[in-house]
Image (cartoon, rainbow, N blue to C red; front, side, top):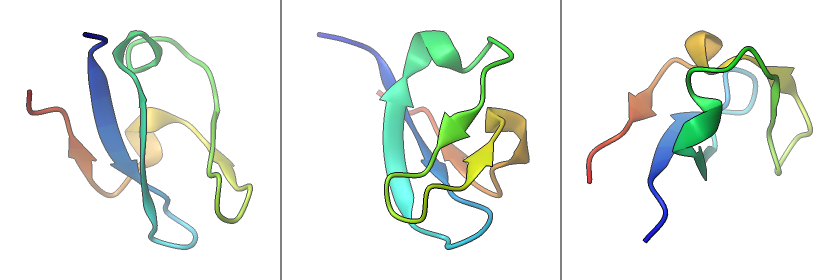
Length: 50
């Protein structure tokens, strides 16, 4: 099973999940709801529970 984490978009506040490998990398996440680009550290909420 792939490890994922949930983030909240700082623009529209919708939640979506990402591959855990992206959490530590300096890549921009793209919200699938509003297409806002942001880094994982910019998310107002991160849930990485198993």
